[in-house]
Structure formats: structure tokens, C-alpha cells
Amino acid sequence: MLELALLGLLKERPMHGYDLRKRLREDFGPLANLSFGSLYPALARLERSGAVRATATDRTPPLRDVAPAMVPLTGSLGGERAALVARLATTKAAAALGSHGTRGRKVYEITGRGDELFEQLLETADSAGEDGRSFSVRLAFARYLTPASRERLLERRRLQLADRLTHARRSLEAPARPLDRYEQALAAHARDIAASDLAWVEGLLHEERERSVRPGRPDLFTMDGTAAAIAGPVPTGTASIAGAAEQERNDA
Image (tube, rainbow, N blue to C red; front, side, top):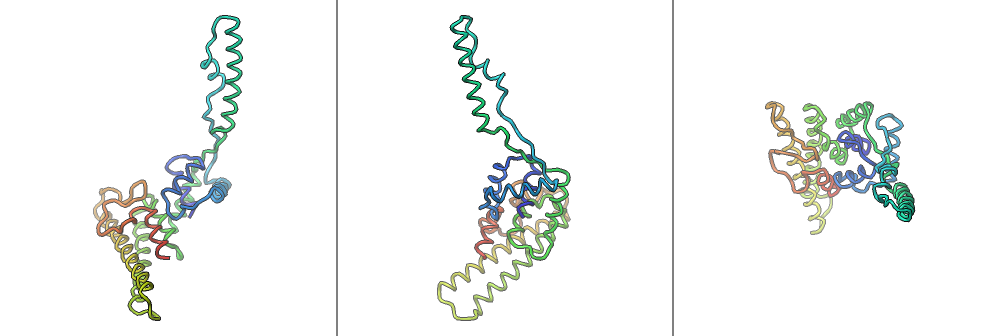
């Protein structure tokens, strides 16, 4: 799931590891707790496989361009000496700044092999064992899927949620043992969340099918992974990937 998210983000533009972590933590609920200890090994694996390449960036301007511009020559002996001292100090400070700044940071970009791997990982949405978290990540990049693949992704999730709703209703209406008021409240909450998520996915699926018979309509998914022009009710907080993951955590 992490590799899929990294490749999907790098398809947008090359990024530093810090930028990737920021996007993953802010925009992807399932990866909100991602640490650098998990991020960089994943990037290293992708780099070894040829899916991404890393280059160093150097945003520090050349020192020969910095020092003279900052301290102009005066024309006098004393002024020349002071200017020389100032230029040497500036050069030393710039070198120190460069060693602690962005000099040498890696920028990662996707390769042709990475594009192929991304498509392969994205298409595994039909595999058995997919959970709500992996569904959320794939939904973020559903714009890269064919219409038929998007329908399969949404239909699979619809069936999962329908089963979850049936189970939640059964647990509430015919519990294995008597429930106290608090257990009943939790069971009712699980039922409502399952029903809300199911209505949301059915709305997405309906819209996708409408687009397949009426080509030319705006894309269902925007660049940030949110749903647009959804037919049917949308539960609060589930229009975004982070919201969908939060609902999944509530269900667990």
C-alpha cells in the first residue's frame, strides 16, 4: 500500500522524502502515522527495483556569485582590506549554510518501470483480501484506472460493506447475548456507519456507471482524491481519503 501511494504521488511531480511524508500524513488517512523509518526503506526498495530514481538538488547559489555582490569594492586600501575580510566571512558562512540546508537532499522521480509497477499495484484492487485501507488508497488514484476497473473496485467495496451492514444489523437485532445500553449504542453506531459508507460507495458506483453510458462528463475523482458530482447521500467525512480511513478505523 505504501509503495502504491509513493508511486502515485511521484506521478504528479518529483518530490523530496520530506514532501512525500507530508503529503502522505496530511492527505492519506491510512498512512497518517507514517514515519521516516518506514518511508525511506520503501523508497530504497523502489529505487533498487528501478521504479524510482533519486537525484541530489543544490539550491545554494555558487559562492563566486554571492560574495562579490554582497560587499562591493571601495577603491581605498583600507576599504579593500575590509571588503576582502567581509568576502571571506561571507564565503565561510555560505558554505556552512549550504552544509545544513537543502544541499545534497535527494529528489525522487518515477521511472518507466515505476509507471508499470504503479499500474500493476493499482489493478490488484480485485484481489482477495483487500481491506478498507487499501481501498482508500486505491480510490485516491482511481483516475488512473479504466472505467471497467473503477467499477470493479467500487462494486467489490459495495459487496464488502453490504455484508458488514448485514452483520451489524444482526448483532443489534439478534445479539448472541443481552446487551446493555452502552453496548447497544456501539452496535447501533457500527450499523449506522456501515449504512452510511454503503450509501456513499453506491453513489460513487452509480455515478461511474452513468459516466460510462454518457461519455464526456467531468471525471468522478479530482486530483486530491475527493469525489465530485456524487449521486446519492455522502456521509460526513468520507468524501476524502482521510475521511474514508477514519470511518474504517471506527468500524474496526
